[in-house]
Length: 492
Image (cartoon, rainbow, N blue to C red; front, side):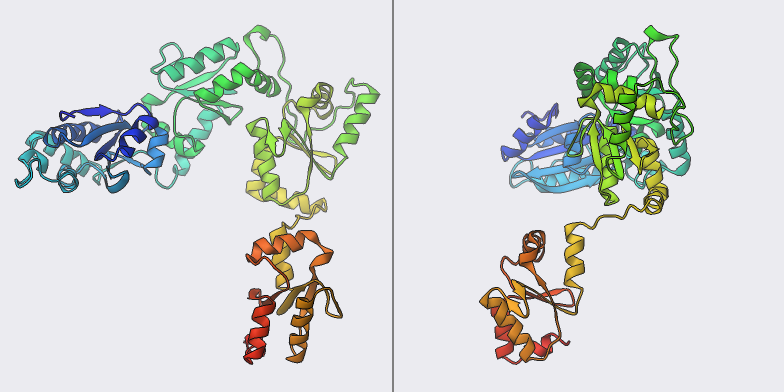
């Protein structure tokens, strides 16, 4: 290799080097981190001493897929890969530890000879070493965090939220719209201009606290980040995809974002949170009747883009996820499939965007309101007040059945009329031992029959449980009885 350091441009490139079986030493760095820059000089010197190893640099923030694969949360960070596996890692600006680990995994420069001074971290020179160690001391540790470890502090959270909501469309980017500092930011700016949308922006290169805090706040590791009405739409790739498909224009329209072509147009106000129905909507009686019928077609009704198992926008997906988490049965209507319903419902409900969630015919709101209500516990309260009972999952139901009696047997048929010989044997064994038990006929409920096989990891019936724990099937029950252990096992 000639003792050079190479920058990694893609995960595919790195995987190729790692899978070749060669010794690979990775330096994860960041352009804003001074410790990374100084350790890079040490790294370069070490590559000269150990020319047979691959010394590779990875810019942690620009290669999030690689950083995630190697569990990088701070820079500088080093990973030592041998025979395709990570042998060691090192976090922080510690030249001596870096040199020692390189020497340990790479061996001497020439067999039979001790490592050269540079391999011990000395080639970098006293000035570099002193600078790195002083920087580490200033920071109170030997590392500089990429991300806030326990999430942004409350003050930072408030600041981030205020920034995100400072404009209906908000772009966090590198540089400014007039002078973008990266191609991805430039592309999103161009897209917003093509969409003729007014937007605010924030240069994350000017404020590292915002830059790192926003990654954690949004759970999105890269920039740019595009927000609409406080909701993260995504980064450059997603913005391009939405723009090309026309979805971005729909999102802006549905959220009442004014384009520069329609400066005189009014943005529809959402109302007072519950989206009261206008006294006179101007809708035809036929359409009004249809909308009312749809809204009341289920106690919990969601008008969304796409279907629950295939949402077509992040806002719809979020509400679906919330309803699933709350174990609520609901019906849905794909507003992309019917333009008349899509436009008419906005007027009927006086609510300009989607999704729209209704409970017992009353509009609750969109994704923001539903999320806030879930976080505060209000959603659960509203559901209870409206008589919407959370639906037990099959797993919940099985747990309740299994624990419905201290001794519980799942059989084919009933104790008085078993429908198979194995079930009959287990019933007779329990009765002969004088054990009281509950039973469930698995022939009467196919969901329970199939679900219990998976739940218990036991493929056949009958199944005998004691205090919620599986004892076994017919063979085990008969063996316990023959050994005189059945009654004691079921009365411990």
